Image (cartoon, rainbow, N blue to C red):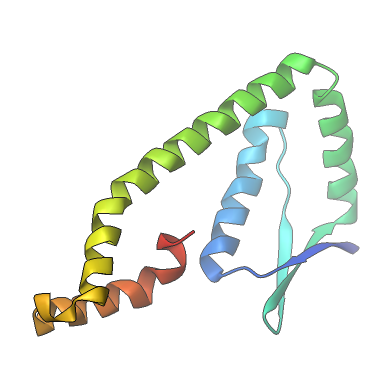
Length: 130
């Protein structure tokens, strides 16, 4: 099996998990999925795909794109997902606003609230500010 380096990215473990799920969802669009291998190199993650599998995906996507309607549907779904993400981000704003008030005026919060906020930030900081 020959593995080809596709790209290098800074990815969290959660990002890698999401990437792998997304690779499996490719099957919904083109009938096959792809398996990537992830290797950490310092802060970077190198992403590899198996050459024969990658060649097959290339051919299938090339065929998929012969029908403009396929790509139109893919784009429509893409924008629907973006809309859902934006709605979810809006639902996060009340919490983020209150967190900001606690940062600016720590005297308004009890010790329990400050500890809880620290736990929330420690476990979600990167996600909540994307």
